[in-house]
Structures are given as C-alpha cells and as structure tokens.
Length: 109
Length: 113
Image 1 (cartoon, rainbow over the protein chains, first blue to last red):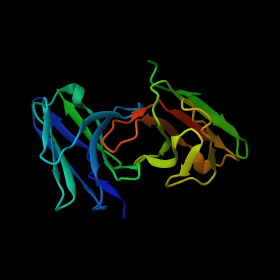
Image 2: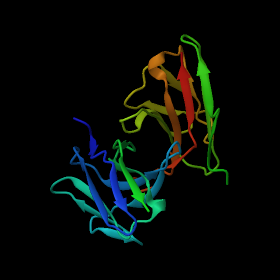
Image 3: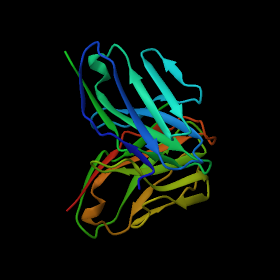
C-alpha cells in the first residue's frame, strides 16, 4: 500500500468553479502535512502547510482529518492559473517526506 | 539567493556509463535530499542528508551513491547507468524541523539508452 494516495484526476472545471479533492495517508504517526503545486515539467513548490484546525490561504482551504487519515484541498473561484498538479505531502518525525502521485486540475475558460 | 541549483538540466547516457548529478544550495539548510519522479508515481526518496558528513538511504537507493562534504553541496552519483534510471531527478533542501518548507531545484532529466 502506498504511504500517500491521491485521486489522479484530472479534474476539469470552468473558471470560477470550486474544486476539491482529498488524499489519504497510511502512517498514523505522521506529523506534518503539506500541499505542493507542480506545473508541467517544473519543480514542486509549496502551496500551503496543513494544520490540525484547518487553514485558508486566499482561495485555498486545507483540512486535516487525523481520525480518518486524510487531508483535503479546496480551491474556490478557480482561475486559469490554478491549472497544475497538486501533490499531497506527509512527514513523519524522521525527516522524511512522502509524496502522493498528484491530482491534476485543469481550469478551462 | 540562488536557492537550490542543479546541473545538468538534461543528460543522455548509455547503459553502463557513470555520471554525477550536481546539487547546491545557498540557504545554509541542514537537510538535503534527492528524489526521482516517474510518470504516475509520487516523488521517491533516493538518499538524504541531515548535515555535512551524514547521509542515509531513502526508499530507492540502489544504483546511487551520495556524499555530503559541505553544507552546500550534495552530489548524486550513478555508478553504472541502467534504462530503469531514466527519470527526472530533483534535489531539495530545507531546515531541520518537521514543519519546514522544502525547496526544490529545477530538476535534471536523465535518459539512459
């Protein structure tokens, strides 16, 4: 079983729509959670960290459910520039990060 | 700051050849790591280092060596390239601490024939 699993998508949404997707993780000892964004043929970049109480960053909202071992990302008022692959990343206390394979989002005009 | 830099950007090797992928960071980060990214799979950790002189294996270390003689540099060596090592390789660095942001280099695209 993969440590971090994501729905690969793609999620095709019109501009202005809301899109949401989850990822699940298998290690109950995981301590840190992130969403990274990766554009085609580029390096991943941090989108946002995910905190236990949930957090927002502009149009992006992340939630963590430790009991069910999943995190979610919601994008409101989608822009064309939001088209990317979103990587779910989970960390334990031994410095290692586990990456999901990514969820592809395509926002169309 | 240049951040994390990687060279080369692209490389074609023949089976059995060796080469070194270079990685450097100027942010004084203790933690550095190498990943490979293949289609349909998440980034997989090859090797990592928590400081100069300290390295350890990740998830897929076979066929790769690393060393960390300075805080800034963390080269990845392919000992005898195989077609299965065709991939995109990313170097990354961050401060120690579980909540710290990880910064990636631009990647090296490697094709092994």
